[in-house]
Length: 68
Image (cartoon, rainbow, N blue to C red; front, side):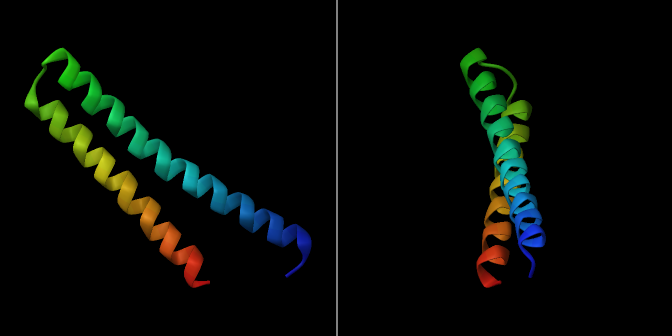
């Protein structure tokens, strides 16, 4: 693998990690805001689902990258 292809692959991996963590962080903000406001349960569940999807995506990517 040439160095430019390696750097591109590393950049794509880093962006994928950041997207996964961003999805999870967005869910944490939704959950935190709805709990602090004492708002509807549906928004809390939606936030928790977002956290779960982001975490699943992150760990799936982590396993894929470590496998090679």
